[in-house]
Amino acid sequence: MIPASFDYVRAKSLRDALNAIGTDGTKVLAGGHSLIPMMRFRLAQPGRLLDIGQLAELKGIDLKGRGARIGAGTSYRELLDSPELAERYPLIAEATRGIGDVQVRNRGTIGGGLAHADPASDMPAVMLALGATFNLRSKGGKRSVAAADFFTGAFTTALASDELLIDIALPAPPKKAGMAYASFEQKASGYAIAAAAAVVTKSRKTITGVTLALTGVGDRAYLADASGAVGSHGDDAALEAAVANVTKGIDVNGDIHASVEYRSHLARVVARRAIALALSRAG
Ligand SMILES: Cc1cc2nc3c(=O)[nH]c(=O)nc-3n(C[C@H](O)[C@H](O)[C@H](O)COP(=O)(O)OP(=O)(O)OC[C@H]3O[C@@H](n4cnc5c(N)ncnc54)[C@H](O)[C@@H]3O)c2cc1C
Image (cartoon, rainbow, N blue to C red; front, side, top):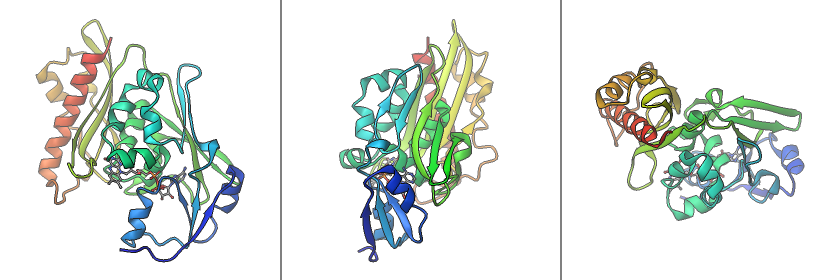
């Protein structure tokens, strides 16, 4: 379908964008790979698009220190083109490689993916597992929101209507941690039917820490409890038991791709796979 008519403005500077955002009917446009399809289906009908795609202030990857800062306007392609980022956070590259197709990765931005908060998108789970903090800004000020508090429901986040996601701050990964992303995805789009991001630490052969996040399962990406794996050697039985309750308290989606029962099963499968793979990479 053709979108309803709208005005288009290109922000020339961050200040420009912050002055314009929040005004009636204005929606921010980054890579457009989520917003434009929504407009074509008339699920979104903004009166005005504010294009932030050219803003240098929102782009780039800063790896000074032991953590990282990623500009919200950085494309998936630019993430993949950074060997330094892949070395420090291999989880990001592993998940990003599976996002959409070449066009989607060339145009889509990490900030757009996070702000859009599609319940099946990949990056929210990765950011949860890495303990990211999102830096937001409006004309009136700045604030930071932990990834764990950012995703509030399907396609909804803690972003206020006059706020922009500016960048993402990642803490240093735990020493010698192994990381992995395991996705059972819908073949046509690459979106997760169920996917898991895991960060695992070990001492000798014993697991000392697991951070696990799931996406595609409920109305938003979430941190799941797999602490039962700690103290084990990560053998099949231990991991099976550790992921038994990863959908506990979650209203699991049922749709044309997977029933509630099947998706719950897949959630356990991808959780186990991600932890096992992360463990094999730890140390
Ligand atoms: C065919 C196809 C396959 C795809 N497959 C996958 C997949 O496998 N996995 C996956 O995770 N995603 C997938 N996507 C989605 C893709 O990753 C999107 O491009 C991305 O999620 C949105 O980024 P964008 O830059 O295109 O954002 P846009 O579409 O421009 O914007 C999306 C939303 O975020 C808001 N927004 C954007 N930037 C900011 C900001 N800095 N601050 C505040 N709000 C902002 C916009 O106002 C809008 O509401 C797919 C998309 C397509 C078309």
